[in-house]
Image (tube, rainbow, N blue to C red):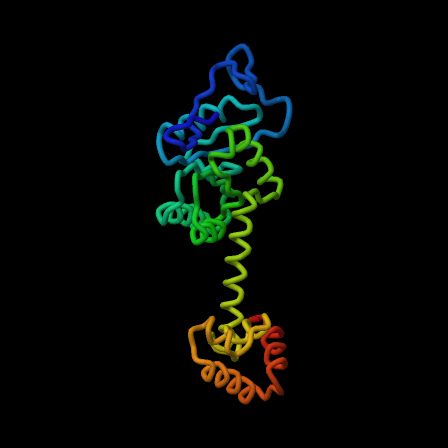
Length: 241
């Protein structure tokens, strides 16, 4: 369940005994003989209330085995509950990743917010899904865990776009590093490819028009390119324009 405090949603509710979704035998033990294969989940939470709420739900859910944090290497998936992803969060995920040489269980991250910079870092350290706390319930998280183990990478569309854009930028930087064009030359060629005149490019990049013409002349002379169109085509082939 979700509880609202000051406009923020937190996964912190403890389900009542016999609540919907809970299947137990007369002794009170969970009956996992029916339904999907049991999923072993371990929890790391930003605070005790959130952690205890998650563990209470999971311990009563069908086909779930709750694994103590100290035995996390035996889990199928790690559930990390945070408010905001910080450098400390990334450090925790890095430690989890490195303690198993990247062979440990995948991580499902549930947060209020995450920056683009941190998003790429957490994905690098074993996070296979990111859920926003205000959009999910515990049942959603459990379903996401099962989907993650089935090979799906769950993430809100806005976060997916952020990852794709960040990867695109990184790819451009790598290509630029390996190309024979400078950062300024690439910037000029990109704007030229958009159809801007040398005067418009100069205004966009805060250079004089003479400087822009000089940059283009240098590129064409150094790389033996016939004209500006040839220069743009060269940049496209190199993957930097």
